[in-house]
Amino acid sequence: MDGTERWTSCKDKCKCFVKVNKKKEVIECVTQHNHEKTIESVLNRQKLSNCVKRNTIDDPCEGSIKMLQRQLIKEDIPTK
Image (cartoon, rainbow, N blue to C red; front, top):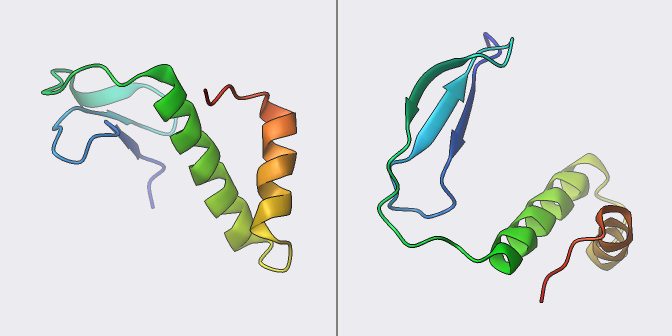
């Protein structure tokens, strides 16, 4: 892998994306979203969910509830 990262919109049908190289320089992007702005609490829940999923892969022996609680405390993420 060459270190290229691709970041996409959280909406499945949205074509918006940014591609960056390993130096974090933008090498390609489409910035036109085709949906309404997502509310912050939904984005925060998605961020938290993705973090717990990654942690579950890294440490499958620890329960997901413990990971979720730890991440909520660590990140102080508002979800309401």
